[in-house]
Image (cartoon, rainbow, N blue to C red; front, side):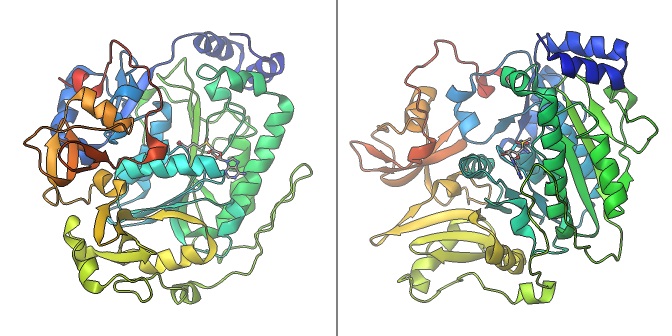
Length: 500
Ligand SMILES: C[S@@+](CC[C@H](N)C(=O)[O-])C[C@H]1O[C@@H](n2cnc3c(N)ncnc32)[C@H](O)[C@@H]1O
């Protein structure tokens, strides 16, 4: 691989020639393939099977290296949210979450979340009863984020589409912040040739300045003693150690250690004269791409400082917009609840869909026009506060839409782990039919199949709904998520096959 000369010179200067040469050699080598399984959907037995057959990613309880790339697009279990294809090093976020969350539910913001690798991961690792807000500033990427989180199926998620500065009124709101910031992407050189062609020293400078602006914007939203996890997929110290040092000095943050095993071959601080704990993954030492992570704690009892960060090159957004106190926030706009007025939906109609969720009493059923979603009652004040400042794409489980007199269950419900398994008639289908269904083509079920709304399953995992009218079944799969490729590879390597 031909690397930019300025990158080579700079990286060699802080890594040393020997280490740099090994890195450069590894960048020309093969990329490992890794996935993270969804324990909530697959259950325990899949994990033991995988552990017996594949090498686990040592720092992630549900991560595995695969010998070959699965044919993800044509694997129904991929579309059903049973696993996420994720680069192994970035699964290290799990160590930070496990070390600094206990058993008590937390409110977490994943600020730069699309396409959703770390959000889906965090959602699997956070203490039970926690709320995750997953945000992405770029509109079309936020749709992909929402899709991936819907498929992952956890009900305790809000997806937003905002700039970091839009969070400014949510002071002292989150217990955990994850800032997996946009970066110069040196750690992706092996995976993505575009990252090499787009690299320049000027871009590194733009990146570290943008990262500081993002951090300044979001820091006030962290509660005192809250935890910020900072990560990049780049090697240079400007976007890594120097930004962590800047947060330490500017915000009074404490840089925290993680427990790691020597076998993981993680590299520490490479900034001369500093030894605060940071965690670097270098591809010649660990099986994965380049990754950097540090954990910082906000000092106790400091009200949020009014931080501003100005850069010469960027339009810096001020964070000093009008702030509301936590009390005022809690009194703000209440989401429309059960039996809300002016929707034309009666309490009786709404009651008919409550049994579709397990523990339905834990949820508030929220109406928007003819659509109903279910959101945890424990987080309604937080949802109100989020609603008052952010653009929310989805909150909780999308349950159903009333069409005429009939409730049509939403695809989000089929994907959700909150779905009551006995709520709908089920029909198990084979691979070919599953692919047709995911292409949103017509599906014909067996003569014996039940009529009406039927939940299709593949290997007993819910794939989505159809309305079976006998000679055909109307496909209720979301049009925008359908498999567009008409091509079907002759040999398909899917999770179900390699999982025995
Ligand atoms: C490294 S990627 C995130 C990857 C994601 N965390 C995951 O694990 O799948 C960084 C994200 O930041 C978003 N981004 C770009 N500019 C941004 C900005 N100014 N503020 C916040 N996020 C930004 C990008 O669109 C991108 O989705």
